[in-house]
Length: 158
Image (cartoon, rainbow, N blue to C red):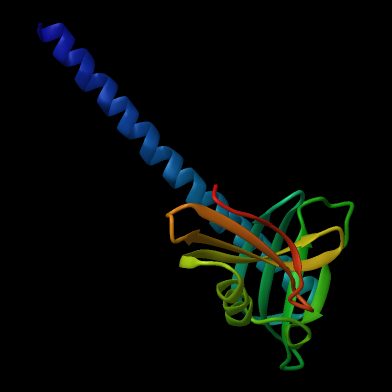
């Protein structure tokens, strides 16, 4: 009986250790990606004051850093994970703010809670990805064109 109890204790400790490690590794990856993206944005777009960081994992992976450049303008820098593609720099005034994007989704869907809002890029077009829970506690993903606010696609009741 003692062996069974010890075996269970050891397995629980291994499971807890694996969980802690996976949480740490995920946070470390995102922090490392953020630091690299900010460095790249500073080189690519003369970003002087970084504000927000977004990690987008759609059909393509993009890192987006927003902030103020050396001219004092609010910009967004879309940095592709695929090094064959080029970064894209846009003035944030050209598109929707995070709040505007969220409000558009709230107007069109029965949103109970916003989970996340991410800037991203698909097929060369900047977008907002809004992740939410609906009134049935199911997840929804709503993709809006960054510049126009037009619906690109959505997934409901996941």
